[in-house]
Image 1 (cartoon, rainbow, N blue to C red):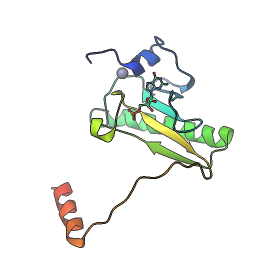
Image 2 (tube, helix red, strand yellow):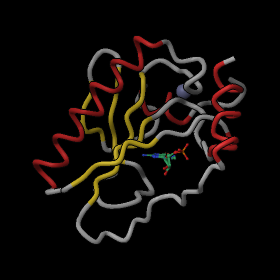
Image 3 (cartoon, helix red, strand yellow):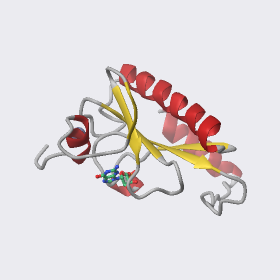
Image 4 (cartoon, protein in one colour):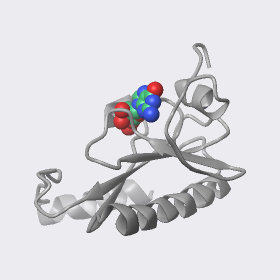
Amino acid sequence: MSSPCIFCQIVNGKIPAEKIYEDNNTLAFLDINPLCRGHVLVIPKKHYENIFDLPSKELINLIATAQKIAQMIKKNLGATGINLLHASGKDAQQSVFHFHIHVVPRYPNDGLNTWPSSRYQEKDLRKVKKALCQ
Ligand code: 5GP
Ligand code: ZN
């Protein structure tokens, strides 16, 4: 890591955050620029950059924490749905290079739109499967 990581600084208390939950391995806090009210970030306390260097046992801890947060959001903020979002890599629009899962509350008619979808030609579908599974 060349420059100080902002999320490591939140873990060690050097910069403030509205912490929602923590345990030995994970920390959850409010996103400073939320997609909507109650948008939470779940991070490992140890620094990992993305999905490619994160050990799977850390991911299990993170998903369990994300589920706890989702339940809190549903119960206490009245959300009727949740999106779990994650970005690995700058081309996936990752902007903070310390692994994190976004827990995004959804409410009726909240105006947050889903991503566009496309359609495969039949032969392309098979080609992509072949490329992916080699
Ligand atoms: P990404 O774009 O990497 O998927 O998400 C990074 C998230 O971190 C963004 O939603 C951004 O608002 C949030 N964020 C960036 N800096 C800070 C900060 O200093 N404090 C908090 N609480 N959130 C931050
Ligand atoms: Zn970090």
